[in-house]
Structure formats: structure tokens, C-alpha cells
Amino acid sequence: MNKQDKIYIAGHRGMVGSAIRRVLEKNGFTNFVTRTSKELDLVEQNDVRAFFEKEKPAYVFLAAAKVGGILANNTYRAEFIYNNILIQSNIIDAAYRNGVKKLLFLGSSCIYPKLAPQPMSEESLLTGLLEQTNEPYAIAKIAGIKMCDAYRSQYGCDFISVMPTNLYGPNDNYDLKKSHVLPALMRKFIEAKRNGDATVTIWGTGSPKREFLHVDDLAVACFHLMKNFSGEGLVNIGTGTDVSIYELAEKIKEVTGFEGEIVKDTSKPDGTPRKLLNISKLKALGWEPSITLDEGIRTVYNNVKDTVWQDGNPSLV
Image (cartoon, rainbow, N blue to C red; front, side, top):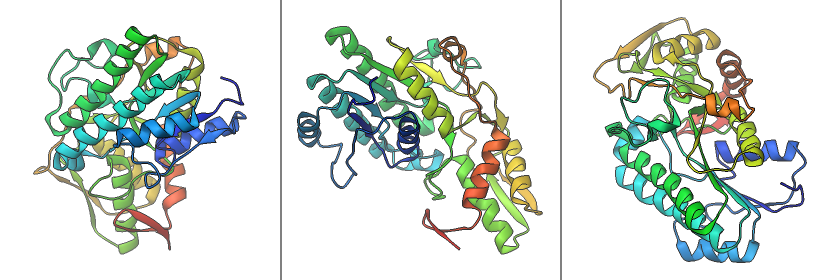
């Protein structure tokens, strides 16, 4: 990658896209082409094609997607499969048609079977049934991986796929109806402490184990792989360690200083029992994460502790 090359980050204002841009800028890249969702609807094929024909980016980071936690995935099943398939298909095809040098597609660890051997290696893809609550989203992401591979095979496109684990960090979503578990818990504990509540409720039994990666680490990994990896298939990006949801709640409780009780709502689903990525392939390519979970949680707390949320949209106290 040359620092003069034009770079398109699809989803540049989201948590992942904005982190990738910060890392690229830190490394001297300045030639970005951007469009907001209002300026460019990535679901519309003709609009995406016209954008690529006009701008001709050399490198593409495909971080745009419709995302959410268990509730959102299970509620908006049609939207999750329809929008994600169209977004990624339009961008991947337009990148091929306009001579993009390299494209990095970001998937999700939910692509792996619900009962995949732990930790989950890249070879586990398509070896079993998916978790039912987020199956539409997972199928869309699997299609994106296979599309990158197909365009590599048929057209010689240097399109690669990476699979990040659960992410958190700046520009996260704190809407309790749509957010992932870490920001949802962070908001719950901050508000409970502020309101003097006696309890904070977590979904399910608290026993499922999850791996959490700070989005700044993900961005560094994506930049590293864009420079150092070319091949079909995918590369897991994670930390190689996990904690139970209850342990995560305890960590956030400690950081926020909430003194009440953690209550388990066992009427709510747990989701997949465990989701830990095997990151041996990533390590062999020369990269490991640097931000610990405890450090990351404290950083997030310090950034949002004075926030008042209105339907997920933050404003400072």
C-alpha cells in the first residue's frame, strides 16, 4: 500500500470503520474517499457502481453492515440477511469491475457452527448447524466470504476475508434493543449506579463464554493483514481468551463502582454456549493483540461514564 493510494472505507463512521481510519491516518494515509449512508445507499446496486466508477479507489475496507446483538438479530431476521447480502455483493462486484487492487471483507465469528470445537479454527466453517438466533446474519457473512473467494478464483481479485470476534470500543452502539453485550452491560451498570438501583439484570444464566477484542486492536490487525496476507478462506481476529458473561458483568460492575446485585434473567436466551477463536493463523502472520480486556473496559468506561443515553444516542451529562 502506498500512502498516496485512494482508500474507501465502507462504513467509515461506524465503530470498525472509524477505527480503521484512525490507524491508517496514524500510519500516514490521507487519501480517503467517503460517503455517508444518506449520500450513498449501499443496498442500491446502480448507486454503488456509479460511485466506484467515479472515485476508482485502490483499496477497500468493507466494514459496512447491519449489525446487532441477540435481540436485534432475532427480531429483524429478514432485514439482516437482505441488507447485508446486498451491501457486500454490490461493493465486492463493483470493486472487481473497477480494478480495485485489494479488498478486505469483515465478517463475524457467528459464521461458525453453534457447537463448533473450541477454540474455533477457520476450518470449522460450514461443518455444522448455525446458532438459530443469528442465522440470517451469519449466512449473509458466509456468502461474503465465498463471494470473495469466487472472485479471486474466477477473476484473480485480491479480495481477503477476516473474522473478528466480539468487538467493543469508541463509537459503539449503546441502544439496549440493538447493542451487543459489553456496551449493553456498560450502559446498564452506569445507569444503575447513577439511579441508585439495587440490581442490574443480565440475560440468561451468565454461563456462555465470549471473547472480546478492542476495536483499535482489530483495526491494527486489518491494516497488518491488508499488507501481509493474500489468500482464499479467512483469518480469525481475536485475543485467544474468553470470559463468561457473568464474569464480564462482574468486571464492569467493579470498574463502574456499582454496589448492588447482579440478577440473572433465565427466561432470556443464552445464545451460543461458547465462541472462542483460534488465532494461530493470525499469529503465524505476525500479529497479536495488545489491549487487555481489563484495560479496554476501563478505557471505555472513562469515555462514556458521563453519558446520558436517549434511544442509544449518547449525549454528555
